[in-house]
Each structure stands twice: as structure tokens, then as C-alpha cells.
Image 1: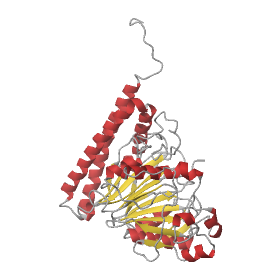
Image 2: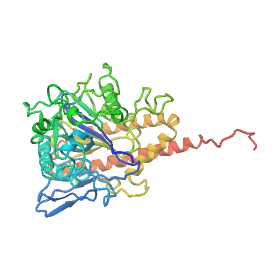
Image 3: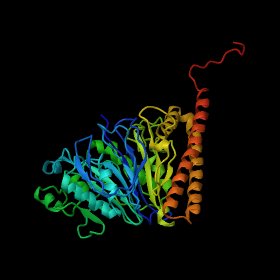
Amino acid sequence: MYEQACTTILVGKKATVDGSTIIARNDDTFMPITPQKFIVHPAVHGRHETLTSGKNGFTAPLPADGYRYQGVPNIEVAEKGVFEENGFNEKNVGVSSTESVYGNEHTLTFDPFVKNGLAEDSLPTMVTPFIDSAREGVTYLGNLIAKYGSPEGNGVLFNDKNDVWYMEIVTGHHWVAQRIPDDAYAVAANQVAIQWVDFDDPDNFMWSDGIQDFVAEHHLNPDKAGFNFRHIFGTDNEKDRHYNTPRVWYGQRYFNPEIEQDPQSSELPFICHAAKKISVADVEYVLGSHYNETKYDPFTDSPEAKKFRPISMNRTQNSHVMQIRNDVPADQSAIMWMTFGMPAFAPYLPFHANISETDPSFANTPLTYDRKSAYWLYRTVSMIVESHYADFVQDDVDYLKECRIELAQFVAETDKQAAHLSGDELTAFLTEQDKQMVAQMRDKAEALIGRLITKGLTLSKLTYNVDINL
């Protein structure tokens, strides 16, 4: 059985090239095919509904009122759960959940998971429509965990225009959250990431009630001084060093090429400061990477090519970079760059937070193959490129470059045209703009598929040069 495993990147506003806050994640699932759709839920008022999880039986009443919000749920929800994963609400608060993390047996002995507690499949639905800031997201979710407990370890990402928070829930009821400093970035990969917690700094750290007493009472702190959350609650084993730490190492290697580190180190830092300002394209590159230009790249013939689990995988169902800009009006500032294909091979499309609906190709994903659907279209691109990687990768590189140029132009032109709009008129305009962008990118993807299939017909192993007349 595959484990559900993702990769997370968080960037403060002074560490980005344009003053944006960024949270980003690869949503990696159990199997290569787990169809998803991208939808917008309208705001609700006076509702009387109960949420019941198809995954673990979690049940809770939904608040009467909730903001409009985006979700990227699974198609098969009856037994697997909804898993809305990521999206902005109408207050420009971004939520991405979750990065699976694993607590150790020592802490779980004394605070075990709650079987029918609040799990990843229900978490976005229970949180995203009800918060007004990233910090409030941590508080709101923390209160839910105190009330219902957690059945698993989860890392949850929040951002608003000023703040980026990362929250790690590691036992049935205990968690810590850290604000990413404005001038810093962080990478997390399925291992408890947060390190030293300063309980005298509530502006930058938040934590579950009683966590210090819990650790002291059960003698869980292995360090002689201080409170290292990773050391106390996390794992440090052989699997981590092949499956998790190398992904953190590669992300830090990209953002800080001047620093040499061991990809199997258990002490890679959580809070980091990049050598240069970070762009959305940089984050996309890391999420789409497979140890490029190293001996660990599975597309090379290196003896160590399969040693580590790569960042981009065929199990990545959706990869997203959630950007809140501070150089444009707030109502058009939040953009979720997202791809349903493997992020190594498929483009990230920019979707505004302030939209009322998504294009039908994203909103109506079928369970079985249909290239009218964006999910199946971009997974087709990914599969074809990987199938003849050496022959097709340059075509894909050129295609992705063209897409990035056109999409950057789309965002800039949309910003310009939206500047004089507001209210419902602005929402309608951004909704229509995003649909036109989807159509434009569909045409480019279909054209690439046609070129690659045509080229692939010349690569058959059932080819033999014979006399021209035979």
C-alpha cells in the first residue's frame, strides 16, 4: 500500500520577488489515478446541515453561515472522503491541507489518535469557509482538534496578504504552528518539520493547550534544553532518510545553492533564508522536480537514480501555488496556480480567488478517461512525455516556457482591465477571464499532444529499413 505523501513550500512576503505571500503543495495520493475536480462553493446563510465523513465516520454540524470558497475534491467521495484539499475563501485566506506527517510511538502512546476525529478528508470543508485570516485559521482548527481529536498526523498551510502559517497536528490532540518569517521560506515533506518552539513568542508560535505539561509529565523531551518539536514528536528513521529528507534537501539546494547539506540529514533546518528573492516560477520548479541535474534523478542511468523518492510523481493529483499579491487591489490579488497533470510536465494555470464558478472542464471531471476534462487532458500530456522522456522532454520544456509566457501576460492584462471594476462586476469579469484562459491552454495542450503522438509514430521498435520497393 502506498502512503499518502505530499511536499510543501511556504514563503514569506519579503522573501518573494513581488511581495506576495505563497503557500504551495503537491497533493500526492495513494494511487496514480484519483480523479479530482475544481469547484467554487457559494456563500451560505442560515444553513442547518451536518457533515459526515465517508472515510472515518467523523460527524459535526456545519456553521449556519460560511464564506464563498474554492475546493478541489475527489470524484469518488462515498468511501474515500471529500478531500477538498486547497482553495481560497472570499476573504483572501488560503488553505492547503494536508501535508501528511507522522508522530512517533512515544508521544502517541500517551495521546493516541482518535479514530473518528477530524481527518484530512473533512478538514478543508470544516475550516476554509469560516476564517478571516491565516492566524485565525490556526486558532479555528486548533479548537476543532481540541473538540473532536485527530485520527492522523497532518500539516496545514494558511496564508493571507501578510502572514504565512504552518500548523502540524501530530497526535490525537497536540499540535504546534509557526509563522514563517517575512524574509524566510520553508520546505516540508512528510516528516515533522517545526523545530525550536519559543513559548514566550505567541506572535510567531501557537500550540495546543497543555502541550508543555504533556511533554514534561511523560518524559518525552530528549534534549537537555529547549523544546524541539521535531525531536519530541517526530520520527527519525531509515524511511525518513530515503523518502522524506531528500525532498527537503533538494528544495533547499535550489533556493540556497551555496549551502552544502546531506540529503539524508535529520537536522535540515525548517526556517531558511534564500540566496535570492523567490518567484512563483521557482516554487513551481521545485514542486515539478525529480532531483534534476543530480545523480538521484530517476531519468538518468546513475546507480543512485532510484535511491530517493522524487518530489514530482505520477501520484501527484494536483499541484498548487497559492499566491496573494500586495501590489494590486485586494479583490483581484489572490491567485491559485494549479495543475492536474504531473507538475514535472504540465503547466500551472492561474485561477483568481474572486470567481463565482470554474470552467466545466475543471468542474465536471468524470471518473473514466475523457480528454474534455482538464484532469484527464493534463494527465495525458504527462503520460505521453514520460513515455518517451529522452525524445519528448525538450518539446515539453518548450511548451511549458510558452505557457508561462502566455499565462504571465494573461495575468498582467487581466490586472489592467480589472483595475476599474469592483463588486459583482469584477467577480463576473475574473470568472470569464479564467474560462478564456482555460480554453487557450486547452488548445495548446491538444496541439502538443498531436505533435508528440506524430513524433512518437516514428519511434516504434517495430521499424526496419528495407529496400524502398518493399
